[in-house]
Length: 273
Length: 321
Image (cartoon, rainbow over all chains, first blue to last red; front, side, top):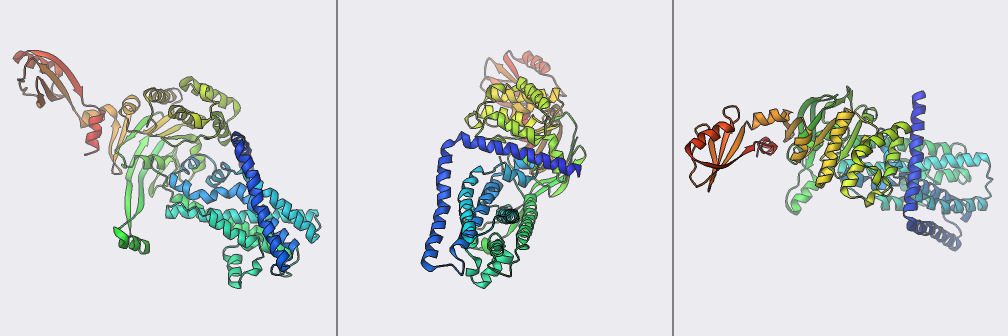
């Protein structure tokens, strides 16, 4: 127990230092800040504007009204932003594999995945968080959700699980580079798929796809099922249980990703000087 | 200190056949060939040694040093550092090693050099007093203070390598691995690097393991050489012993006043060009003074010089061209 505690303190200490350095880097290049502050939120606010337009034209999407869609969209964007802060490096794992950039992580006394993600922590991801939170609060108000401690805890559990699912999927896809020895930037594709499956109700897709997105690539648990439960849209989704299922799925995906990554790391070939 | 036991590293190489047909075949039924980058290497390195790994490009030096520092997992065999298998106990064992790999830097590109050290202080949990003392010591050898506030991206290669050396030693490891550290450095930066290696080895008893193609590095630093070619150990021993064994001869260069040059019964005349003749002789049989005396009895000598069989001859022979 004492050892685990000391280790936790060690990792937290390094994390604080890494975040400090991330802020220093941002300050070093101030012109980037303005660009990110404008373009990132704009991207999601425009996405939301499209939903608003569709709902205004058709009344609703697959039985979901405007407020419910805002709630879903907001929650999805928040977990997207969190995954961008902590796990976006996963998109570029292939380059790290090919260029031999894992060398330095392997020669330091910390977990390799931890170093890979946290020494490259993307503080700019915060700029995605803002529109997400705004739209989510808007959705809460529209749906008349009572924001009490239980609700906040449930949302935190869901967001943790959802971020782990996203991060785990990035790691799984990135780790294929150890075996294929090629750098594929799959960020674009995953982003497209994740957007389309987490920002809109999954129930609008054919059943076979719903099955895949629930059990095989469990992105349904990122936002669709938890929101269905929280808002009481689908009576089959238990309000108390589903947040924990999301968390469990997140942990499971992360564990599988970790094992797959470790297997890949054994095959890591570094790169010639 | 370091024990390599029957180290092997294989790579699977995808076979490519020529043309579109070959490309399609490779896509559907890829053929693989196993490359044995390192085969059955065993050696033992004691605390405080400076060991040079040399061999031609692609010989397996870097693969070996990367297995020793925990970056690559051996296909067979294992590396023990102070009795512990680095593949199994990576996080514990790497606390005691430092690594500088040629062109690759572990410094943060965007920030001042000091920030990279600060991060390492947290990663290795170095307390402030030790950190300051080590930095002070390393500054004495390398003169790091003058660049510590400079962003790494604005540094020259020489300065960056200095930064990387300090970064690799900031946690006072017992073993330092250097993979072609002097590559691309100018004379004064090379000098600083060699001085640094000698100093940390002398003062801190740091075990140093390096790969290099630079004869100067070998001559100045390495008491012991391990020569690798085709993934196999060719030689392992003291530098002068290897030179004596592989190249047990010297060459005497004699200049005469005209173009005729006499033979000498104990030597082989390897070259005769104009007024100059070269005599190759075995060190154990003859001395240069004896040959000069014999030759000057026959003919008047204008000038002499001696060519030692150097490390470059060793490398030529060992690389087995």
